[in-house]
Image (cartoon, rainbow, N blue to C red):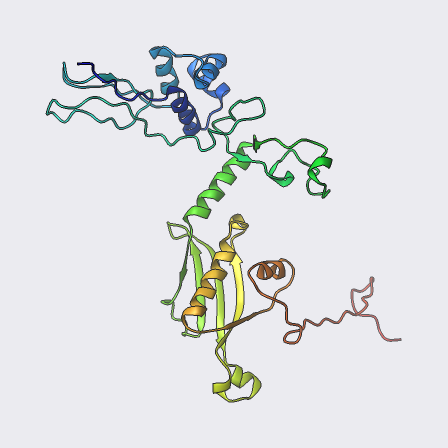
Length: 312
């Protein structure tokens, strides 16, 4: 009977995932391990099968370890995974085979290629380029609104950011976007007419807050209470500066609108200026000049005293 070989680890993909997990470029891993960068590049492209000693040096350079699991004699086969990870070991019944596995997450952009058919750096975050603003190299993208045939430079299929600080901030932002949660606060002693929503990270760190209060239109306008449904006034939406542009504010507003639907509140009013106007407009708010008007009075100021000039 012919024995079936167990599935083998894709060594090239595993080493790329290992390098990404360690946040090292090929050059940095080559310097740490003593394996020439050219050799490492050929291994990662699948053009060369490395010796066991080479794999060991690469794994040890990033603090990993190699595990060898062997099935009972005459029953199983030997598998050597290139990095530490769980193995399906024999359970003692004499009926299993060793299987090579890898616990590292795959490189998320491993399928992307540049125009020459090469993979993008495994340790960097790569994203597809669909328009000029997606590409850091398109310095002209914010200044000109040109059709594709008029672009000064040809857009690449994908791009990445070399600056490590920027990349780390981008990764952190993606993590925050995935993990933060919005909840309605009801246990802080406020009256039921005072609404509060907070955006928090898993550890409880507060990164955003929305406050609103119910007002009574029948008192405001002097009509019968039954003629006027409940409505809200949005007091403000605050997001920590480090966590802006991650959708936190929009999620807070969506939570407010969801709660309004649950308790049959059909209207919320807000006063905003500057960037707040654009934010609320993006959330569905519309201007109403007939309700609230912002007024200002400017008087000429004396440059010498800093006081308003007299009328003489």
